Amino acid sequence: MRRLATLPLPLTVLLGGLHRHPYTEQPVRRTTVYVWDQGREVHELVAPDGTPYVMQSYSLAVDPSLTEADLPELDGRLQLPDVWRYRVRRLGEEWKLGVDAEARAIQDELENSYQRVEPSSPGSDVSGR
Image (tube, rainbow, N blue to C red; front, side):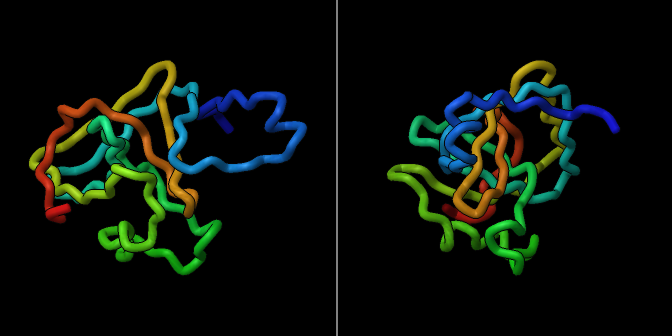
């Protein structure tokens, strides 16, 4: 076993039980590199200020029937906060997203996980959203 990430949890979370707050950034201390191949689709949430968060994993905890094939139409299921949007992009080149300290992650209400990225990420919008 090796440690991949550390999530600092405030004492109030530990005492009051784990209450999820979708679309709220959480710090995650880790050293990782995610790699997407050229031509792959990436699924992203975009905050009101234009900051994208790329999906790292989808979850079966809330909806066990969710599949990868469902992801392009996920925006129809999400209860996005005002001015947030969901998009799908096809990458024009291989993309490596690395972090060596602290990542900023969020989850949607289905507990899918996303990592904050710089707005200058590669690819093109393939969904028209």
